[in-house]
Image (cartoon, rainbow, N blue to C red; front, side, top):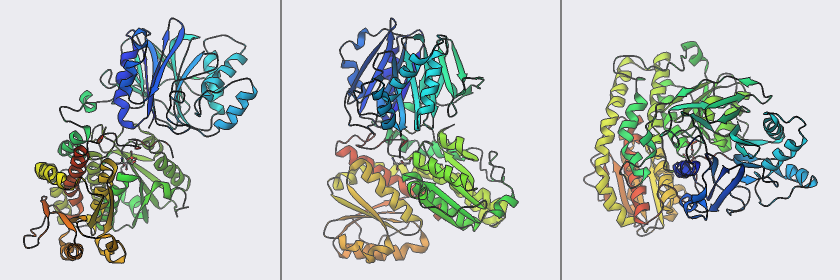
Length: 613
Ligand code: AGP
């Protein structure tokens, strides 16, 4: 969704701002803009369409300011248009503002400002912010360094909703101000220059030192200093965090798309996820958790809550935790969970999964379960993301920055981390034998190699994708753990190829979906669970009888059966099989989208991180 970049230093700000926006493009947006301080006045350049269009705007090359703010907008209030793009100015051109989040009470604030003589030129919620700052600034009687901060403080106290805000002003031409509540923002510390961004990868090529703001904390940046304040404008001290993220994680490294790069990064991402948490001879190690047998024995119910792909990873986690720990697990979609009054008490453990750690519904669901007394555990890929700040405990997948909107390596890392977590619980609870533990550990440690082997199907999948890329509907079938892979494969396909697809538990076919099967419809079957092979095959045969073309992803020898396409994956234990069987389906979605000439990394209407409800 929206992205924010800021720069204050000695270099020309414009190229740094546009470079940062290009790195935030993956979040999804429909317009972009920048604002710089030019000889004590504020300039603004903005438009709809791609960030690179900014380079063509008249006068952009004449901007020489060393301080600026920039934004990519994903429309919420008001259609994508130049007027609705950020930055927004107040009526007197004193303050320029970019904002991520949603101001829920903007109509009320707008009416108030209109009554006080302000005019609005956009349909956005954001435009109230610079005007409120201007309103409060004028009311201030003391003209000191804190005058703008006090105006911003009062403004933020009026705002309901979520916000990450950057402000520049002609009254403070050597500063840039940042404040946040429930929307992500990081500050990068440089040498005689400082940076602001919605995420670390966009500015990691400039610095490895970052500050993270808590809700209602404010930062006053100058070239060589950053001052931090709480909402009452008391000065606070913040620790700098050194983040060891490769600068090239935000580059394509020779791949034609981020998605393909990220699919191929899976062996190394999985190695990093396993890290030192698991080894053949020692107990699983989660220093961040330190759960005791007494605590885990008191847990009588686990909820796993997430959205989209992260929720599909949660479905695999349910199977692992129930099987290894014998604790009942319910998997919920966050947007449903938060409004359905779930039964939660102090004996409930709620696990929240989010690659970005910023998904609004997942965060809201987490807050709800905390308020009802549950213990909360966040699983995220992004250090210091909102979900990890909110939860009682946090563990990271360490999969590296994921840029493509379609999640791939984050999914496989989540699945493996959930399995290691289940094993960690099981070791503490002594709920499985040491032989079972040892076997599962061996299988987990062998996974990076097996994923590498699986990737050898790439050419075959690419060839097959050309055969089916013009289909209108594609169905995915599986049973047990393979059903979770069917769901994820189907989601991947629809989000980047725009082909309608659905996933069904194979045993459900007869209860309705089989009515959709007709001549030449493509059905993808996933068959890896040894105990369910025959059952799934007989379901697939039912669709073949009705004229369907079939593609089977399997770790079995199914030589005697006539499928249109078989893609073999290495054998691993059932709990881990989604990690290998999803790979051909990720590749299939990728190559179909590419073959159709679509924007693989930035599919229409989608955002990488869904920070609004
Ligand atoms: C994945 O391909 C999707 N883009 C989407 O379903 C995503 O997984 C979902 O929005 C959740 O995001 P999160 O993991 O950052 O919370």
